[in-house]
Image 1 (cartoon, rainbow, N blue to C red):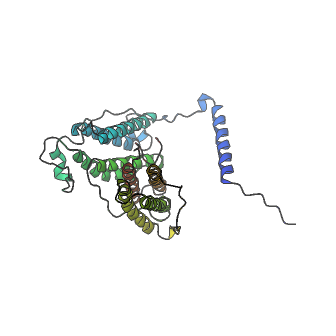
Image 2: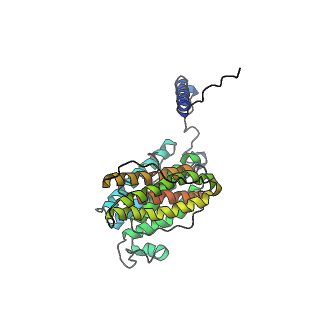
Image 3: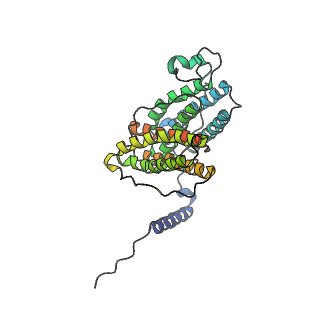
Length: 336
């Protein structure tokens, strides 16, 4: 008689078992005496960076850079614009979260240096001016929004270098933060260009490709169903073209790890109204950033591949804004 095989365990059952196990561990931990507990700040000496939790110096560096951006936004003097108001909201939330993470690690916040990212247009024009930036005015006394944008654009080099030294505990947060700042550069009028992507490559590219392919397909559909010559179609096409280019790069980077692309994807129907189409377009583009951050977890310490992750998250953030989506302080993740 053949042995009776147990039925396969579903993924949901495994997750439920893991959750119950985790709950039991939490309950067991609650029964420990206070003397048995170890504080995460034990051993931390405020004056000795060698004792600080991992990545604390990176969080502090990002906080100072962000403070300079906020001061620069004030110097630009566009506080009444919708972009400035939105960036102020985002950057305030980012700074508060960075400060919370530092203090939770038992490290007091160092005093911030009041160094605006821009003060006069001439401060940045010699090193970072781009003739293609339409709002550039190096002879003006007051800085322009694009002057601040160019600073953010230039800072991505150092920010990505720091990112490549981060531990997995804060890798996604710092990648998301860097990407949001590069996206902000574009919103401020500084044209952002990228070198050919060095990653994510191989298996790390697969989750990003899995989000990019249906996004291309969906945008092609909603563009085709929108009125020719309409602003609606123009918005989809403005995102679709660079997204197609990104998808081709990811396919090349994935190489043999890339699964065969399906002929099509199921989409919600009927997609008859403008709002239905826009909602679908936003949802598809919104999937790109978390997929890229998933890839980041697979390539810690790899500067080239992490820079590619930042590019994907940054571009997706810009595209989502073009489609009317609400921007987040940490795109691709819930508030850390």
